[in-house]
Image 1: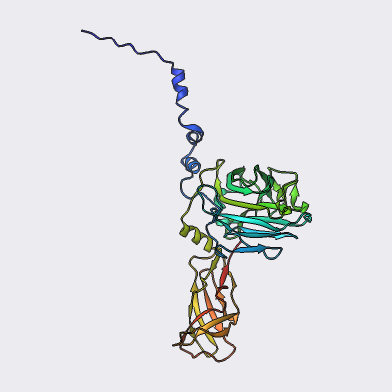
Image 2: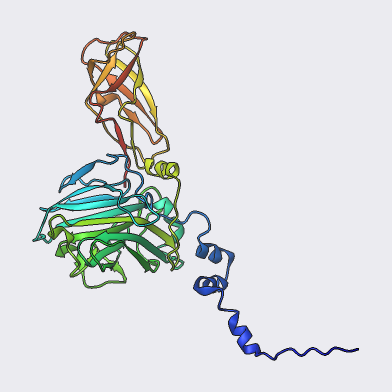
Length: 387
């Protein structure tokens, strides 16, 4: 007995067209990659985010406290995001627990003193400056310059077009553009892709390789009508940008900041808290408020110790510390004596500092050891190697 099976006819053209459907936009881009490295860059294999502390977890300077940002000095709402309020206005800056899904923290700016008439040379801004070593692989300043994509979440009280710019250390070959806050008090996701800079002078060592400027209101000196092109000198925002600083009590929050190679924004790279802290400590490190240092007396007026930083710092740090210490004599449990510190003897390096305590009087006994604490436990020593 024979059995005949008939199979329905089909169109080869239709079947071939269906092959493209399951892979989507990203799949199509991946299939068009000409080299393994292009494919790797597209899927962002390995570390991809050049921004440090983009999720705003680390805040070594004052943890959950607040700070009033005025014309002097600049300061940080969270680690690595340096901020200025150069003019008559002021911000209260802090780390916030208000964040979009997938994030725990954001940086927050609240206008505490409005500036309704910004002077031509005034500026209100937050920046992150990327170290040259972390930026060198982009090849900027050459014909092989790679494009990058910046992405972030933002929530602002004042809708409008906000200035943003990318610039080298000399701030003389800038790329000026903008993004828009569409709705007040609503988390919105923004992406900005910019072409690689084939000209300009770009630092590729411990200096500022690339700076990014998010604007809150800046004077006409720094505005330009020429946007979306490289080559603007000392210009940072488009003309007619929003001026959040002009509205008292207005708030601005930002988190999930990521800068990656390529023309597409990918999912945010969440690093562990410990890894993010170590990355931040390359630029700023603060001893715990109750960290005691064992010092060894060389003479009646001088005792010393060494402090090893948890990571190698970017450069020899500046040191901010109390001018006096409290110390305990050997065998004492009550740390109540005070010593005036002579900073002349400090010898700082990128990995350690020799910390000397020079006393005005003969208070030490050579050969003995003492325990010291900062005279004010709320102001422990700080080591600053920020860009």
